[in-house]
Image (tube, rainbow, N blue to C red; front, side, top):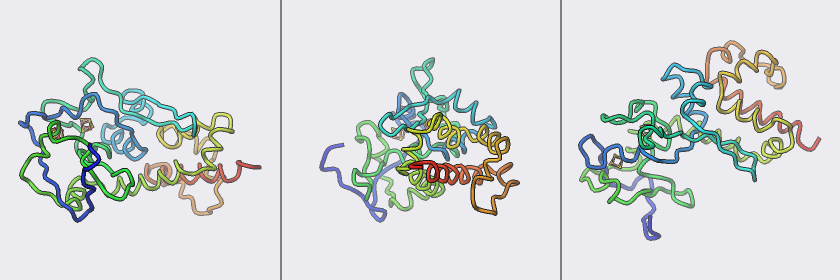
Length: 237
Ligand code: SF4
Ligand code: SF4
């Protein structure tokens, strides 16, 4: 987008409508770089009734940021269908109710300062931006079901921005793999939690082991707390 693009607030409006039949339909689901968060992965693997391990192996590729020793997860595009997303067909997104955060935000994104929002694509490429339908941003975000995604992404941001945890990933042998397991491969992390009794490492007397066995959100919350607790104890010892 050019530099004069207006930064929008929640009370501002924009024009948008996306529907089958529009000339660009599903073109934005092809050859795109989409980073996935732990909550994105959890929602999709549960909807598909497959394990986190199978989801990661089939639909994603692992990236690595050496400066922070941070492992990221990106959607893999389907090379056999012209780099289209594995989940798009002629009717659109096959996992629409469970699509990840970036797909819910599109065609909007945060502005550079993170204080507002801007269209991330020109209306010549996303024709829905030329539609007459007017949305207030607040209503648009609600319509897209963004609230739980934003909450879990905020929690994940605390983890990704934790400097002690970044140091721990760099210094602790296998730290990057353990971080990847706890954040993204929850079903395998659950096995480790009970095999190694990882819940005994937290001071909280109230870790609900039954919830960790059956509730992925409780397990994800535990994973974030456990990672930060381990880093706090280990770094600078
Ligand atoms: S480019 Fe825009 S209008 Fe076209 S399918 Fe994607 S979101 Fe919809
Ligand atoms: S998950 Fe759905 S909306 Fe997102 S790129 Fe794939 S098909 Fe498109």
